[in-house]
Length: 379
Image (cartoon, rainbow, N blue to C red; front, side):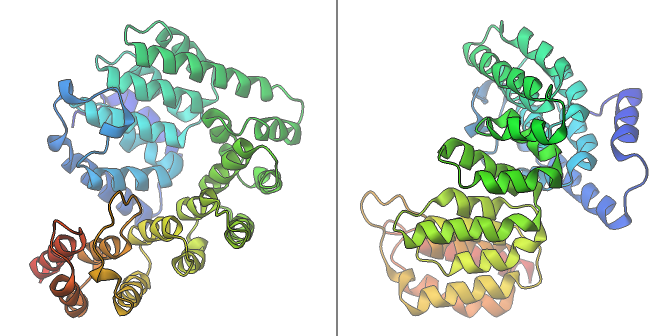
């Protein structure tokens, strides 16, 4: 991965970190960057990366997890993303632009403006989306230039994003923080408004919780996403209670479960365990995805117990139904155990492998076989 030259990288690091990070955080940051760099060579050829977010993480789950972790560090993750933005591969540069956009704020604008002239339309597409989250007039100027881009998708994205960013900058003209937050909540259905609300942190939590009762479902969805990214524990009970109420009413609003799964604070753990017990496959799938990537001492036991319960009711022996689009929870749990399990789970995985339908009927058997191979290889 190409490194940014000297002065720019050093200035960004100094400005963003403002001093030395704690040793454990610094070590985790270094590990994330190392994992991201390790995926650089496996990127798609530049001419094979379409102008589409769908291609960014294809066959790069390790890179996606490393990016998610870097984003979770907030401003401290920006220097590593800036270095990723100097990669020789367009797919990695696009990944980096996505990550910078997820962090957002003025601290990301210089790197994104620099990337707005990238030769790859896939990178410029991600930059056009990310610039909306900078809450910056400089970001708006870069978007205005991208509005004349030679690529139609980049051009359309820049035009739409610039309109959203203008709304954010207008809201920021309100005379007090409370009024600015209130104005942003009213347009929380847009990504730039959500990014700006996240930057207000705890001050935005109460208005966002109140917005969960709004009649405009777009505002509700935006409030859920903003609360998840802020990661303030005050939002956990309201998010779960709204999901639980919708489930009991027979109209499960999955956005609340997804908000809990995306919640950045570690306090979400007991709520993820509660989601595992609900009778709603998409909600359980979201919870499993988050638990699988959650470095928690109870993770292995939680996933093992969940999988054992699925086996006890015979879910592992069911063939996929024609046209089935729901997540296969057994396969998802097997996959997690393959990544984080030890030899203690091999008997359970072996039972699943032996009793599951053949591969042409269900993905459970091959997933269990792969998990066994992963654990065995680790010794």
